[in-house]
Image (tube, rainbow over all chains, first blue to last red; front, side, top):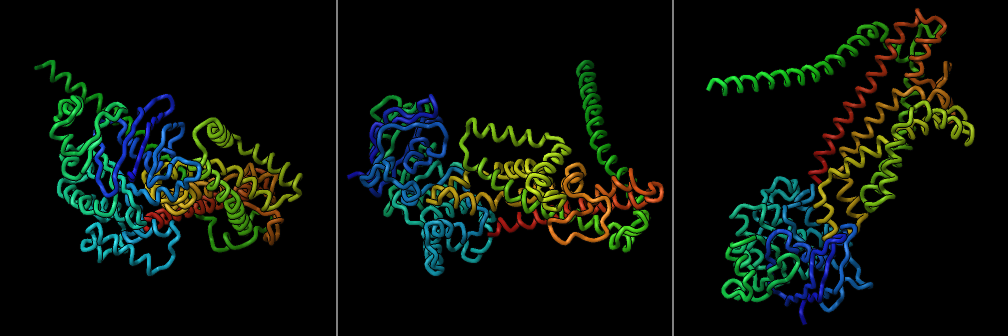
Length: 250
Length: 292
């Protein structure tokens, strides 16, 4: 069974159809890159997976998305629990205006963990997990805003991982970062793959090539091609895909 | 070449003229403020003494102090804030965080703005008929405080809304994406970030409340009271009304002229202190938000 399975998904912002009949499945513990020119619907699709699009007024979705066999748009689905299982990292590093420690602890607290020792343990383990521990261990009580952009983004990844999701959604997580910070995040994605199913939206073709197992190419709200990353980049089946990844448009 | 030079000169000249006008207007605003302040200070400073701020008025309000008016104004500020601050902040949170875009929101918003445009004397009249008569509070701090509270409600709602709007949406999304509920997101993330600016709104309304005369005219203000209020159902004197009284209808207007300026000065000082306090609080909480 696939970890994530979407069938015939259509999505509308008001009258405007942003996704056309998307069917796309992802296996557990794989990294899937969503690529395509701006406005192609890849971020919209990503945000359907943790129902972030619910926050936008006047939208409509048809079709179905199943995670672990459960229809996440079904009536019995609790959105808060879904989002606990499907973590998200945003385009711009957006740590809360809290201390480094509290940024990671926040998710634990809102999910009902009150034991001080458990919170402390999980904060430390998660910060270690994103390879940030050595850099912040002496300033856990300092504001997260004192960190560099790349450190902030790794902190945001830790924040998402602390509540033990099984899926991690990343919406252009390195587009605001310098090359060194970017490579650190990519290394991290590579390691996290063993434990999480990762879906990453990226504008960077090299990045998609480096970090992902599978790649989906979106264009004007349609899924043009979806295959092993290697195949997409070496012998794309569709002309549009080839044109895009070779930089002829987009 | 020559033409180009002339053009460049002309541009520079018109820029200078424009900037000159801009800076003149902005500095005149500052100057005007200082002139008003200086005028009040010069005229009023002579009246100020420990006796003036700590004693009852004497001899038909031509001598003595304005202590009861100061206390009355502070009571009114407190009463109006206890009512208006929670109501205004909660209404603004509801409007900004919960109501979806659409006509109900537009209507609430429009009505709030209209409320802000209602003349203060109308609030006074309304307060008199509702609080004083209908609800039977009589002329009292409660009635006056509620009336003043209604008056500043739109100010508090609007500044709170602006403060909430200024909170970057990605904070809300990040919190919701962690499985936090809307309420947790609002109370634990959005509100603390917006709080320093919300405080500013509150203090601005304190300034407004302490200076308003019309709304307290028929709801609380006393011409002269020989004793301090002991409960919220008592009448009270208040600085702006006292100022009005001794300037227009006192027993001896000429004799109480310097007291009038002294009263004005005290009123300005109270507003000034509350503004300084607002700034300090905002800075303090601004720092604290980042540290938490």
